[in-house]
Length: 246
Length: 120
Image 1 (cartoon, helix red, strand yellow):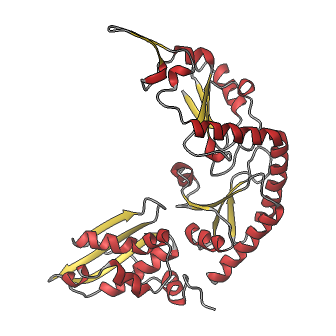
Image 2 (cartoon, chains in turn blue, yellow):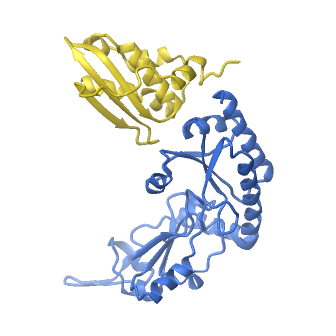
Image 3 (cartoon, rainbow over the protein chains, first blue to last red):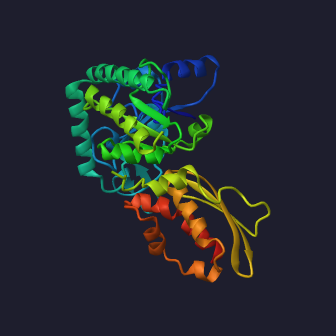
C-alpha cells in the first residue's frame, strides 16, 4: 500500500498523484494507492477516476461540515473483497447458529447506529461547496495564494516561508518561522488581532525534522478570506517585531 | 504601554536567560516535553546536603517557557530541596506576574513541573 497526502498540511504542496501512480505502474509495483484528501477536499476539484487511486479519505470538519464524520471511498472491486473490521447491526445479512452472511457494500462497513446528524451535515456542506463550484473556489484561492506569497516575499528579512514559492500546484497554506521568535509567541501576537494560526509541529514531525525547525506558525486561507485578511496578517507580523523589540 | 504578557522582565529573561546550559555529570539530569506544543526543557542540578547547589536549564520553546525556566532557576538556586518542594504552582505563577490563558499556563509551568518531578 502506498499512502500519501493529496496536499501537504505543512507546505501546501499538491502532490502529483496521477504521475506517482503512473510511476508505480511503469515500474511494475503492485501496490494499492490510498490518498489522504483531507487538506484538498474543500479547495480543489477531485476526480477519483482521473486520479487513478484505489482509496480516498477526507474529513468533514475541514470542509465546513460537523466533526466526527468523514468519507472513505474505495474502488468497488476492492470493497467487494474486503471484510469489515467491526461487526454488529446492519453489516449482517443473515444469522444462523452456525453461520452468518455479510450485507452488501457499503452496508457491511457501516456498523452500528449511524452518525445521522453528522452525515446529513456533511452532505449539506458538500452541497454548499458544489453550489459555489470547486473550479471557482480553486481559481479564487489561487489568486489569494499568489497575493499571500507576494506579502511573504516582502517580509523575507524577518519571516521564513516554507513550501513552494509559486501558487501553481500549491494550496494557500502558509507555514513560516519568524527570525528569533518562537512560533507560539508569534501565534499569541497574531491572535490579538483576531488572526488564528496553528503553531507547533502540525502532527507532521518528520517534515519539521526535514526543515530543521521545532515548530512553525501556519496560516491557512479558505474561500471566505480576502486580500484584506492577508494584509492584516502581514501588518500583524510587523507587530511581532515591535513586541519582541527585534 | 507595557505588554501584559511579554513584560519587560519576561523579555529580558527570554533574551538573556539566567543559568542557561548543562552541568556535566550532574546529580540530576531530566528532560521533558509539553506534548501539546512540542516545547522541551532539560534541567541539570547538583545537590549537596539536600540543597540545590547548582542548577542549569536548556530549552527549545516559546518565550514564556524559556523566561519562566530562567526565573525558576534563580528562585531555587541555593535553596533546600525541602523548601523547593513547598513552592506551589500558584506561588510560582504569582512570581511571574503575567496574565496567562490556560494553554500558556502550561508553557509557564513546564520547567516547574520538570523540577518538582525530579526532586519528588
